[in-house]
Image 1 (cartoon, rainbow, N blue to C red):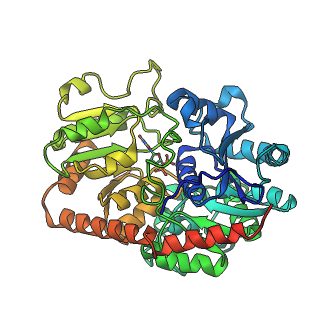
Image 2 (cartoon, protein in one colour; image 1 turned 180 degrees about the vertical axis):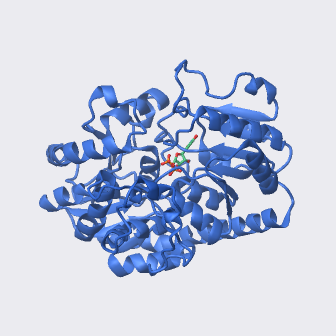
Image 3 (cartoon, rainbow, N blue to C red; image 1 turned 90 degrees about the horizontal axis):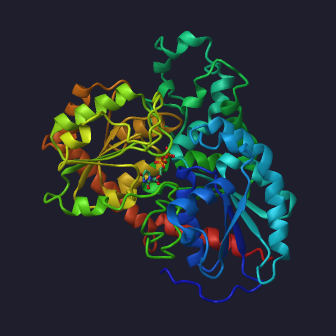
Length: 492
Ligand code: UDP
């Protein structure tokens, strides 16, 4: 079904401009969506921030962002952050503020410039990140179709859609700091249609954990749901009906023109399609697959990765390291160079305990970044210790790999709750997991007990349903076609 569109772009070709929020967990699903749309004959402009464009050039080379196929171009806009603040990739707050201020004007300029560019059909449609909701209004002002792609799970998005209710009902803001630890987070929230009934305040995206009614992340999230999303022509989500039916029904109730397109994984966007176009902001260590190939037993490797934003303390790293070593399973552990927060000596070395790599040599491989889809899809990978970012969670489900969940922030806590309580593929790890707890959890997940076997069976079921959703006649395949038809109806 993936036919590259080799026709030269005609002026009547619908031209879709994609504007992801400039973080790894956003540009990945956006690029997969972009390729799927290009494969269906649309003209695509993919917008990176200048900063990320530079990172891609450094980590992937020129091929990642230039030399694209006919009808697939990359453009850049500034993210509005001062140069000196750019290394703070974990500073979500600053980035949200800066993009909100800087991007609308740049978006308008870019659309106008593309309109004057010879051989390029005029932009007809903008798909902006839900985290860049302001773009809807800028696009509508220019007379373009405007959609918001919310990259979290449907259960996470439904939580965000109910932030205003939490405020109206007096749950948020918290009365004072003691409420973070006094048991208040265990308050049940069972009145949201479409959510599991055993949801607690602690399972809501962590942005509700504030004592400030004007908290920036709280207000931005409410605004995106109350003002931006309803103003869009439609909403795009990266999940599938079988996985999140109840949450999706509730979302469609509020936002009827919702397109459920996931999983935007290898079936929708095969790595072989426009293979040079990739979105990893870190350089992938290419030893991983060879190392996995060398593992004789299937499903024997514990894969550990906390994504692109999580930071941990050096003490916590030591507990993970000891626990992993003591559990005995071979492990592949991705440790970003910037992952340890309280690391005084920024010596560029991997922040694991001294001598650890030598100690576990042969059965433990540690790298700075990997091709996660390839690792999760490898026959040797048997479990995933994850921070439950939505992409990681979905990629794990689609690879049929059960999880140990160690959520860090945002709707990762919601994904964790669903993985453990609803999807039956996860076990939650305590926040301050000690080495003994890490060891026990890994042993259980990788062992042959009943609980692990049941989780593996569930994971395999979700994988099968995911494949069906994106196959011909599947729910996500149908929604993708509906989306392409809808945006193709408006010609430039
Ligand atoms: N990823 C990767 N290699 C790594 C770590 C992460 O390719 O070593 C990818 C992963 O496959 C996913 C994205 O980066 O697509 C991370 O997104 P997620 O939502 O899981 O977490 P975030 O980084 O936003 O916290």
